[in-house]
Image 1 (spheres, protein in one colour):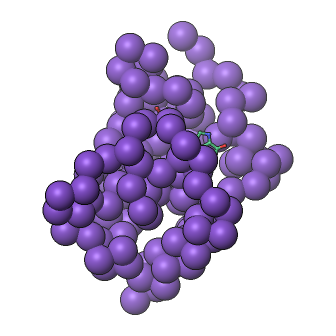
Image 2 (cartoon, rainbow, N blue to C red; image 1 turned 90 degrees about the vertical axis):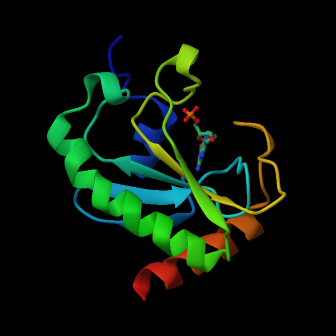
Amino acid sequence: MTYDPNNIFAKILRGEIPCHKVYEDADAIVFMDVMPQSPGHTLILPKAASRNLFDADPSVLANLAPLVQKVAVAAKAAFNADGISVIQYNEPAGGQSVFHLHYHVIPRFEGLALKPHSGKMEDAAVLAANAEKLKAALAK
Ligand code: DGP
């Protein structure tokens, strides 16, 4: 399988469609998942093009890992979470639906089940407020 430069996350990376951005640097972008499985569900993408783990450059994965940790720590604080699930899907059989490598950082709360993956769209105002909360926690 090859990388499709017109996948929705590639369009977000090029600024062609909007997102609720939390963080961006030369190598990565962090934004809110529009179909959150729990409040504060966030996505972390390397800018380098790859479909998923199978075709990713190991150095890209290595560079991204500290950011995944930073976002997980900040999200736990920002959303008062009891825990965090970090999830990464590969190919349709592995649950992937958007084919640009990304990690899900999902705040978890005792007794609260996750909503379905790629389920209902969240209100833009909720996503904007959550992006601001996470930005503030990352800045600390
Ligand atoms: P997956 O490829 O299975 O890891 O899931 C893709 C995730 O991306 C899923 O949780 C829903 C979310 N998503 C799909 N389209 C968009 C979009 O246009 N913007 C944002 N922010 N998230 C999206």
